[in-house]
Image (tube, rainbow over all chains, first blue to last red; front, side):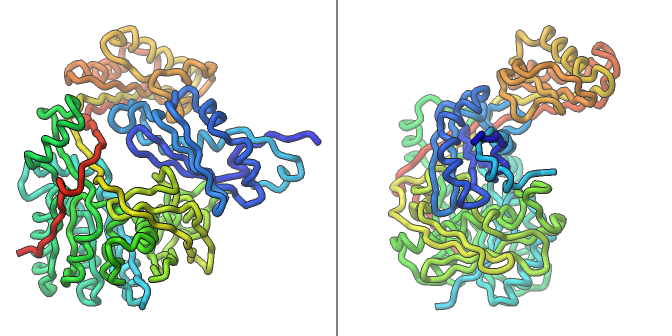
Length: 118
Length: 446
């Protein structure tokens, strides 16, 4: 069976928070059935690579199976945060939406049932 | 034991005022106990300290009058305690203002408690911080140093009969933990209970972020009536369950998605959410919709509190310069890139410049320009060029503003809408201090 590539936002939603130069991005599966796919593919190293241009010093993934969610804590990603960053968005509020474009491989029967924007 | 019913009517300094009335009304109708206002983001405190330096009676929440106008009278009448960090860098002045407002509005004199101990300026405190931080604690540049205090003094003040509790820097969730400790008579070592109340506080502290704010994505996550989002209300049971809902007859939504997003907001290790009161643990948390706009949260665990208190130090930084100009129509993106290149050739050797092409690549990009360099040149037809830089020397930072302004005549064709801004920067350092070096206290306004 050929797998299909879909953006993460079709499997999950999320939110960014910040403390200093650390960003945390939650990734919450739309339903429990999708969660194992995220755990398998959205790894610490995959996320670190996805954000290469922001040069994170460390990515830690925490898994919360009871709510089918994970929490990425990404250090050194905010160019110094509100202290030093030159970014318009010094808090990194938009970063969850960068992650939500991450490509995930899914079986076609699952892909057909995923929500999408039209 | 009756559950505690507590609402939140501000998630930051500058939050909506018109949402206060509905949440107070709902609290009255449900025999609610307390209303909190969270107005103190990390750097709000430093800005408040700067205001106090200029005026000894300033340095508290600038919207204090507007926040209290819809709620002080009804809350006093119905025994709903108001608990807030709106004292910011000057809780005694905020308390005096509240007393004056009550008199002006013809209300009975409220009993106002003022918390202290967060502001660190005693010699032994500074000596400890100097030992810990070394030369980065540049004494000449210090704006503010505050420890995050906890819920114990909030609880004591409420138990002693305070109608209004005015705090400066307390941990945000402690605004809920304090009323819960007072209501249930919990000990300060009842970790399980304090852990649950802490997560209730965490869910409330950002106001509408749990009721549909900071959430909507049209087509994926729709939110009804965002123009009148309701502030949240928590019902906390003595046995450790929380139900999150919102003010009646308001817009917004409370569902499993909004609650899960807010549960993880600004959280790091879910097994160790540290506050002055407790180490909360949500690794086994359950989130369940139990009715329209009603979500139950259970299974929060609590472990002993950390030994140290978190401290934020703010120092005067340099200057932050930002300047923008727009290009539209044919070759708009190319013209914006040419403008950026022109600026770089003129001042790029004295200022480390960041370039954003708003409409093509901006928020996701990095200060070093790696993403911008990777991105193929596009054909954007409506591009706003933004350039920014920081420098210790105000005059040097200001050159960016002058240079972008000069693009009107000296830059590519058709550049319009120049806007420039120069702001002082605040640098923060986070550290810790032993509790016995930073004791908290409270007293009634005399």
